[in-house]
Amino acid sequence: MKYHIEFDIDLKKNPYKGKYIAIEGIDGSGKTTQVEKLVEYFKSQGKNVIQTREPRKTGVIGEIAQQVLNGKLAMSKLALQYLFATDRVLSQEEIIVPALKRGDIVIVDRCFWSAVVYGILDRTGGNYDYKTADFMLIVYSILSMYHQFIVPDYTFYLKIPLETSVSRIHEKDDIKEIYEDKEKLRKVIEGYNWLSAKFMKDIITIDGGKSVNMVTKEIISKIKI
Image (cartoon, rainbow, N blue to C red; front, side):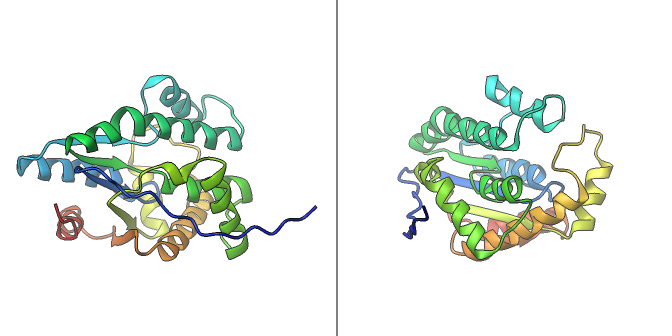
């Protein structure tokens, strides 16, 4: 039987004195570099800063996730997304919330926004049309409890062209991950563009094709601490 369900989702804001900053974007967009730059900048300002990433590479869940991402362990795409969700719950409980309560600045390489983009990619092959994407938002927010996760005070989406991403990935010496495929990257770009347009009040788009220092300067100029 078919049932029509329609409702609004209220994202959970940060209730603590600390600041929560996330850097989002496709592989090769410069997320990790900008996280490191921001950590360096805020530490130079005398701030207590916590740097993390999602999914994490350490711990039982993080190690399994990395093996799947690196193609060393086979797992269904659905199971992988729930694995990411589990890691995010633990990350919030063990790292992010305690730091925010202390008044620290938390800077994270990816957050739950990635789950929406990659989750839709894994389940639909990258169908980001209105009907499918909204359905997936409902599924994530209710069944996976993402509405209970704290939304970053600032989320920056580093937008870069597909060819730039491919070029940067080929320059890396790291093991290529399962999402670092040109056609998948094309779909992920569509996903992030859709996400940043739908949630423009929560996601700030930055031209990631500029020089590293210019990108850092632009991000810092938009943060009020």
